[in-house]
Length: 434
Ligand code: SAH
Ligand code: SF4
Ligand code: F3S
Image 1 (spheres, rainbow, N blue to C red):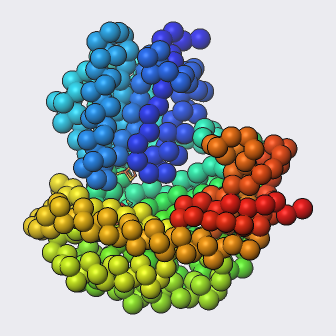
Image 2 (image 1 turned 90 degrees about the horizontal axis):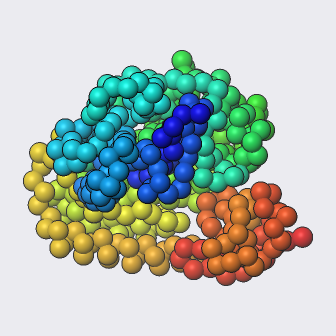
Image 3 (image 1 turned 45 degrees about the vertical axis):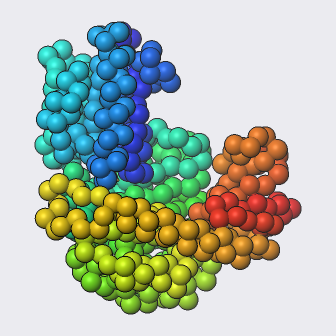
């Protein structure tokens, strides 16, 4: 056994970062390192970072500041920064946090065990892009019965506000065989539900095998019970995909389809390559083919040149489409992106005002949407106890909503039917159907 081998991973950012942290943890474990809960006691502290908005980056710097104290008390500890910020701003990290030992970009983080093994002088920085393939490990995960499966990396879309293509590199898809292999590892370990991850799953391409083909193969050739995916770009959501969603019962009736703005001129400046009416048509098609589908979205307010009128179009869009839920953001300038050259002309106070207005509107819509579920019976994967205590079990509906209901621990991990009895903007409550 190695000495000074206890590590702790702290993860910021999106689900892909959670998935990457899970893969890194599995790799650390098979390389002789041991996960530990306590930051104080860990010999190696790894921060997996996010660059999507300035606030996300500031949060990481705040955390690094806290770690400087731990490092002062015990200089043998290693501090490692990986992921999107490591990719984007390695030098700045070393400037602001010179006590960081190792910095690894999004495609280099899996080199960590071998770097730790080699006795090189620090700091070490590696940020080259290059596909890291490592087969036959089943990534660690936070939940026993559900797991993330990354099916592709990178993004080619270059929406003008977005840093992701710069920090994640170009699109690359994992092979169908490799994905099936990973899912088999998960199902053998008790996983019932997977969420397939990619910045734009619609452009999945394994030597001509596209996303609908992958979904069909996963439904037919694996033992996984429930399949979800995210994110879909509205510009290339195909009829075949809608068909597969409608016909395959293992595919959950949920789509995360970021609209970003309800104004065509803003969508154009964002380089989203679709119009609001195209988006609206898509949601109609989806609801016609899959009547119980839940549609969720991402919205940005305060993009450069957004007028009050543009913003009202976003509000109108939210009301017209009636999203089940939405992630809503204030525009944040990302240096190096195309939009960083536009004048960031919406004052911060106005951005905050618009965001709050939008959040209030969406809260009401989510409430009404959830109220309309009352009296319906939902297929639920029970994933454990509610935070409220052991009288309540917690699960996720097909439409990806959290539902709480009284029940016995012996059904944790099962799919069961729950009748919805009440609902607020965030959560459903129900009763088990025998
Ligand atoms: N690939 C996904 C997710 C990208 S990041 C997609 O295309 O939808 C997640 C969300 O963060 C985006 O959908 C967008 O709404 C938001 N976002 C990205 N860059 C941003 C920025 N500079 N300012 C504010 N929000 C941003
Ligand atoms: Fe960013 Fe657009 Fe790519 Fe999504 S599709 S990751 S928003 S550039
Ligand atoms: Fe995800 Fe943030 Fe990177 S959203 S892809 S961790 S910039």
